[in-house]
Image 1 (cartoon, rainbow, N blue to C red):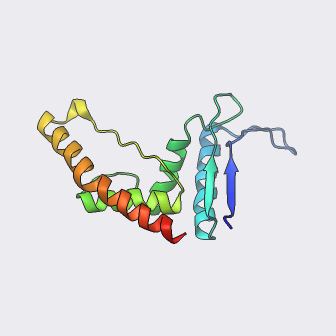
Image 2 (image 1 turned 90 degrees about the vertical axis):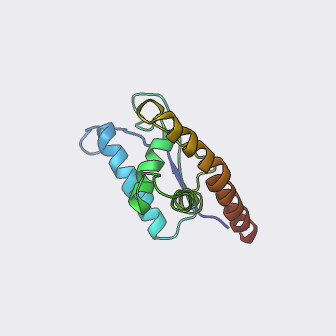
Length: 139
């Protein structure tokens, strides 16, 4: 049985003081909550998406990326094995099922962008898919 927590990263007024936590502070708090959840063995910590003033997480992926940085570093830079390991870590420990990588196309030479795409498709993605498939079979 999986034990999960989820949040919409609400910024509702404090019941005692009436003060509303800022979005920035609430994001910092939920990142701490996610890290603690991982440390104590929770299976999944989900972050919902809302586009209202009283919810701080309009992009759950950004919140989860911030939490992931606390585990292994948020930058996906390095050789294909390093990048694959970081993506695998996100799946196993944060629970993501999709991963989007942004390349700074405008600031990199075209040849470097093409090389990064090729490495992502031919080395990183197959390794991630294989490792995750094997891991999911063991669950």
